[in-house]
Image 1 (tube, rainbow, N blue to C red):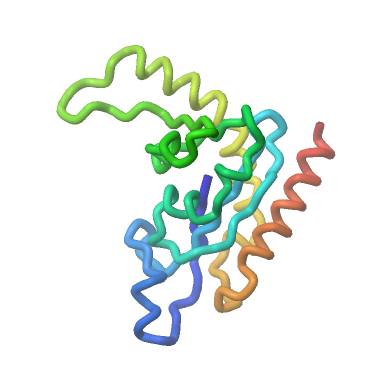
Image 2 (cartoon, helix red, strand yellow):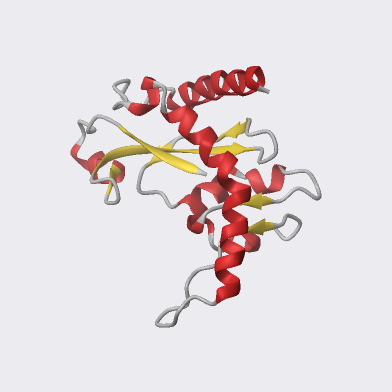
Length: 165
């Protein structure tokens, strides 16, 4: 999954549009974090990219799907619709979207509920990471080594999870 962190507005006028996220209505950096659904531990952190980058584009650029071992799949939220088309050797799944102009079928409700039960540990891990002030507040380090700070916090969260287990 990914998350966005607010950053200071770039000084160069040409760079400003590249970091402005319409979703958050501010300048942001996006980080992709891969979490093991069984343990809840962070297993991979991608390089940080400008906020408007789509989650699926970030997944393609990171090359994560090709690095997964055989038989291991990836679960994503609705931002990753089309994940199963990225790498033919790797399985990917997302929740089912509501059909346009039609009510959602009952079996889709059941599928999405079961899917959410599997992903809840991933969302809890992201929540643990976002509690650290280094990720909760605006990044004032002008986008330098942002991925390294995210990875350091992921290590702290992994340590917390292991201590609780």
